[in-house]
Amino acid sequence: MPSLLTHHPLKALYALFATALEAFRLPLYIVLYLLPSARPHPKWTYKQAVLIKLLKTFLHHAARIEIRMPLSLKPGREGERFVVMRAPEKEVLEKLYFGPLKDPHGEIVPGELGGTWYPSAYPSSSSKNASSEGKDTEDVVLYVHGGAFVLGTGRIYECGFIVSALLRHAGVHRVFCPQYRLAGRPLNARFPAALQDVLTSYLYLTRELGIPAKRVIVSGDSAGGNVAIGLLRYLAEYGAELDLESPAAALLWSPWVDPAAAVDPARFKQNPNYPTDFVPAVFLAWGIRCFSGRDEATGKPKLDPSNKYITPLGRPFKTPTPLWVQTGGAEVLCAEDCKFAEEMREENDGHVGLWVEEGAVHGIALAGPSAGFAREAEACVRRAREWLGGNRRV
Image (cartoon, rainbow, N blue to C red):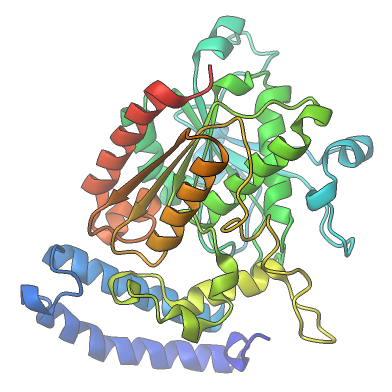
């Protein structure tokens, strides 16, 4: 259950305490890390060590008070690049959103959601600028942002770096970032809300806009990578009967493939890479608790965190979509990402690429500049392009 720190006045008091505590502690680390030998990883620069400490500190306290992440369907800074996808009609719901996408408790149903286009909105089929030639030659990335299922919007201030890297280095033409519903407050949109929304986004691209599946590349980091894997599994299991093709390829950046392991923060802290990553155990525990939901009467999860659509590790599946997995050698998810890639490679007779960036922390695709790993993240995007050249579906 959520702690008392998530409610006022204790929430405000904790925020004041945390601010005072870190105002004292952080300067000590800033000075300490001037010594290369004192940094958590021998290959890190001074800037990387300081930024990672700041990130871990922020996420720890944000998780303790469970900060709210409201989502807006107003365009805001994104202007014409922001679109709102309509809620599916009843007959569409029954036909396309079933099985794992149908909430057994009847509480979570698909609704309207927003999304941001980069560098500009894709022309609709009714647009004067639309052309069948463009639809057959433009590669579009469906990018699902991370944030432990409780944070993130897909908007410019958050996804600008990775989107720019993909547009400059991955050989793609446009990127679409859906603003899927979050499992934290105030929405409390647990599983399968995010997966429903990503399917809605995929249908928007392939059916409403008419983009061929062979021109869609699904991508996602961390929790977004988890949801992207869920979409691939759903299409592999039900795509034929739904007349839905699988995408050309999938680029997964530090995908969170074992959320069930984060239920126990004490166990998660035993990860050998825990001291060299910015992801605190309490943050991931908050994410999976919200994502699986809690029954208010019993306090038990509404959904089993080991469900194959929530925790794909150890549950490989066949997919016609080739996968590429990037992980960091210093991140907490490194071992499980490598294991997942190997499981999927064996299940699919290859067609799965893996790249471990030495010394890198979690999610450098999204958090590259914030963690001091922008250069390494861009290099990984270039490697992804090389892999795409010989492995995507055609």
